[in-house]
Length: 230
Figure 1: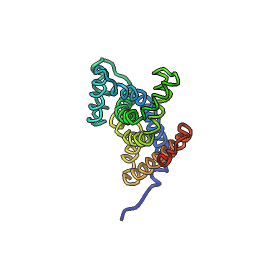
Figure 2: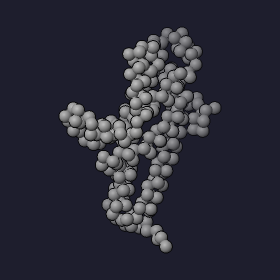
Figure 3: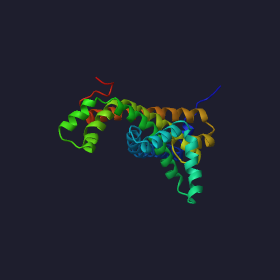
Figure 4: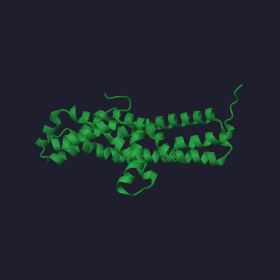
């Protein structure tokens, strides 16, 4: 009969430290990758809506390539392919961050583009009537209103992308999944270890969702985005 032995995970301080470090590594790679990816995603979304083919076509090709290839292929390309091309090897942490940022940007850009497309044209007209320049109109009116419309989708995408960061363990990054695999290989308690990992990922995902729900009330006080739009 199978016997649960969770104590084999908790009795070694090294295992606890690796799990904690794994959580922090997954967290900071997701956050930094999202920040960089989100900034690039805005440029991609604007470029795809441009009437200039020199902007829209490259952006469209980039998004389609990234969205139609596995993240692990993109990761290996950045970690092992680009260093050969440039004859320079950078730390795998930077490779993981770049791969995540590029991947995140493609998915975020489509969500942002949908928000821009669904914005009421009257918002732009009102901003112009107030004397705002086109850059001011975009930064102060168009972008905030568009992000408000797609905020729940952005949050869901962030959480989904966070859950995919376990792939970076394939290049030796000691994130949460790597830490779990390390412990399982030494304790031979795979069921207990991966059950703990599952619970940690669920807890982190729920925490992210709660945090972004609170942030929504501050960023978009005129909307109720915690449980859907009013």
